[in-house]
Amino acid sequence: MMTIVDICRPSTPFPNQPMDLCFRISPCLADPARRSSSCLKLLLLVVHLIYAGVLFLFDGDLIEKTKKEPWYTALYLLLFVVTLVQYFATSVSNPGYVLDAMMEINKKNVVHTKTPETSNQPALGKNGSFVISMEGNQTGKCVAGSNATYWSKLVAELYPPASTIRTWTCTYCNVEQPPRAKHCHDCDKCVLQFDHHCVWLGNCIGQRNHCQFWWYLCEETAVCIWTGFMYISHLKAHITSVWYDFF
Image 1 (cartoon, one colour):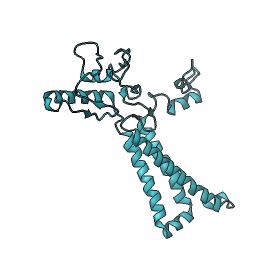
Image 2 (cartoon, rainbow, N blue to C red):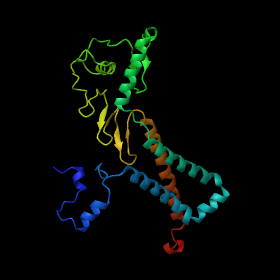
Image 3 (cartoon, rainbow, N blue to C red):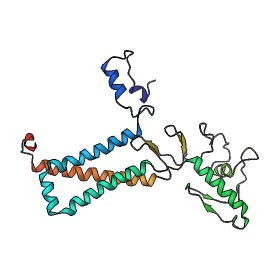
Image 4 (cartoon, rainbow, N blue to C red):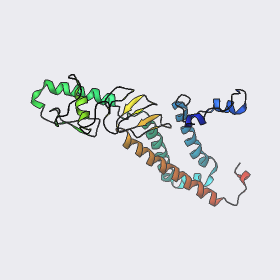
C-alpha cells in the first residue's frame, strides 16, 4: 500500500535521472525527516514579503493614496506585522505536553500533601480541562500498583470504570494520557487535546496554543483578503494597460 511519504520518494531505481534529482532537492511536507522547520518558516516569510511588496513596487495609485490617506496603509502594515509576529509566537508556543502537566500536578500534590489545612480546597491545573481535587480518588476506581502517582489516579477518574491502564497509556512515552491527548510523532511527545501538527508552524496545536492558533488564522485570512482586494482594485484600474508599461 502506498503512503503519502511514498509519493515524495522516487519510484525509479536510477539515481541520475532528473526526476530523482528534483525529489532530492525539493522538501517533502509529508516526510518529517526531509522537511526543515526553519526553511519552511523562512519560505513563508518570503512569500508574505513578495505578496505584499509587489503592490508597493508597481502600484502607483497605492503610493498616492498613502500620501493622501496614510492611515489606510498604516493599518494594513500594522495588520501585516501583527500577523507575522503572531505566526512566530505560535510557532514557538507550548501546545501543552502531557509530561509537563503530569510533573506539574504531581509536584502540586506533594506541596498540598505537606499542607493539610489546604488539602480540601480544589486546585485548577494549568493543563486545562479538568479541576484537580486534592481529596484523591472519589469514585473508588484504582490504578494497578500501590505506588501509583496522583496523575495516574486523576487520569483514571476521566475514563469509564471498565477501562484499564493499558487503554490510556502511551506506548511511546509510557505516560498516562487524558482523553483527547495523543502522541505526536513529529515532536515525539504526547500533547493534551491534540489537534494536529502544523508543518508550516513546525509546532503542534494543542490545549495551550489552540486559541492562539485560531487568532493567527483570523489575522492571516484578513491579510490575504485585504491584499487580494488591493490587487483586484489595481487590475481593474489598469485592465487596458499593456503589461510591459509597468516596467
